[in-house]
Length: 259
Image (cartoon, rainbow, N blue to C red):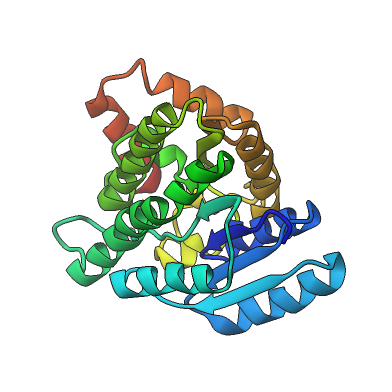
């Protein structure tokens, strides 16, 4: 088995492209998402193109039982992951007071709880083997408050903080933890977040998911703690350290206020 990698949310966007990048580096893959058909199509494509093994699992990671069952299933299959890519997540463009609680709760469960739970399930095995990688997909949203996407921004700040802490604990173990922080990217994120009319999230010049995925794989392999994609995003992430949070919130509000 060729250094298998587990990827969540692999049916579209950055997760889908990360599966392609990892396959091109001859990793076997375990892919999980809610939609089965795209996973099966991707499995057939990658196995034919790269001669690797790809397992697929349809499941909703907001459900704690699904997370445990998925982990148990990979153990039963004899998969000892070299890397876990926690990519699954989504946003929602709305004021917090008017938001749909069920959707906000599902976001918290996926963006925060599922990522934390899966990391806790798979990390001990990596440490015991003395080799491994955790890649947690956050966002440049992690660096500032985000009016109209308050829960999403806060969830990504959690991912950044958690991953930094874990990375420090893992020093000397042979296992690393990386936070990927892309800016707005061409993907299904905008449609699911109901943010297709927000200009900053739908510019024609946005990087593709494939661009971000290639960068993410290199950062993970290098063991970078924080990987901010794109020069402009790197500068902006550093600039957030200089402005008061009230001002940062006003900037975010102006950029993504719903039409």
